[in-house]
Length: 635
Ligand SMILES: Nc1nc2c(ncn2[C@@H]2O[C@H](COP(=O)(O)OP(=O)(O)O)[C@@H](O)[C@H]2O)c(=O)[nH]1
Ligand SMILES: [Mg+2]
Image (cartoon, rainbow, N blue to C red; front, side):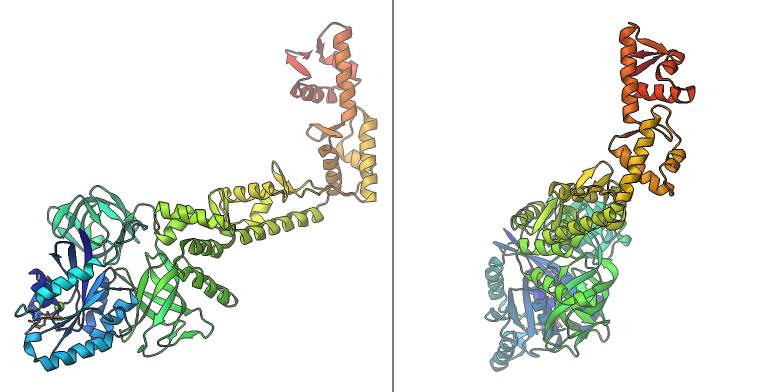
């Protein structure tokens, strides 16, 4: 059986609530104040079983002052019953509610002419003509127009048939999205605790589920679920749903909050969106204008920044805007919303969220930003994903970030990623998707940085990775940095050696003067044999003035293996150490004695104690000798 949501719409006193009662027997006016005053203030609910189709009604208030409440209920409807009293015909909120339905993308409906019993056939035909005129060119053009009397019951059966018929053509809710329930009511039920209600717009809610309550960021537990006033194990998309929550007080929950799958969505405060202004909006939409944005069941104040060249969007026109909200809310790619003027409160347009986590844009980037938003409005997931990745620039997007932007479920994300990677315009860096162009850009910036380092420090082996990270990847996670470096290295852009990176072609080209200095430093150590000079002495003999410069030349000799650091600042020429090792080995062979003590070692090497101990320790480390008490065993 199919579950659909039918919303009433229309001017106050046109008989919406009476109609719902005539259809269902339920009085949707549930508040004492509503009963006393005889008007609907907030949304009310009723349900009707028509056999093939099960209807959850959302009855909305028609009064101008309560349009904000009407919007909390209008967002999730599949089908609208546009109610027009035949004796009064089309009135202001008939138009406003109808506009809201169009802007929210409602695409099925029925026009109901009420209070048939109060007028004659001629007037009825007039009302019908006016109604048809109103809906010409809209989704309601050609929709059934049924005249009824809720008082006498005339036409009610015909209306039920029409609801069954149109209802059966409502497309099943897409299973591509994760669970989302925008909350329109929360209250405490004695003995149960917190209960919330709403239209389940996607996914399912099971008894026992854990869910996130956003933007609060609280994890809650589903103690029980009700659909159409009876307990169920599971509620499905398209059903009016009541959820008994554990882990929270009803007082902490507000209309507009969202129940959703754990760990997937995140609140946002700045989005880029497309908007459509109504023909009869009183003035253009301009930057810095403060507006009321109704999205899901929530109403949040926002500042507009028009992203179009003209700096404004005229009545009747479309355009792209950035909305900066005064408090956080849940919004994902494709979510519809309504914009109302701050004061006087009236509906001026609506739109669709495109980039749910937008950044502030520079004026000169606006043409590019609008191009990106145009691509995001195309309903092609691979294209949308590619664009989201491109817009994320050098940071790229993780799977979690994609989930938070789209509310797509796992399979859909997986498929979109697959298709996106197949185009070759996006690369996968260890789970982070990054646009090929952004990656190329990062690559060339890294190479430039390394090249600049080589130029600045021709004698250093390469650029320390840590320095590269600080300069180009501040604000990037260590994981992402490592992935970028690994991928760049794989592409042959540079060579990574332990803690440094260098360009493949980087050889430490020396000037003639440096070559001479290097050669004389080497000669000093070679000639000194095992009586190595102190570093400062060696520098002085080689005519090196600055010790910084000297250390760079020294590093070259160390890197190439000519000099060996034995202890602190004590360096030896490789050839001197090799000779010593040879001597040790022949000592062991000729005396048939593998042990040698410090005095014998001093004599063999022809050195003082100052050198003997550090050298023996070095030889131990190199496993040429092994210490045993105060003797060494030659290995
Ligand atoms: N005679 C007659 N009165 C109606 C009919 N439908 C509603 N009414 C009356 O019109 C008034 C407003 O109806 P209500 O359902 O509250 O209008 P809403 O504001 O659109 O919900 C009430 O006094 C109803 O009794 C109808 O079909 N015939
Ligand atoms: Mg009413």
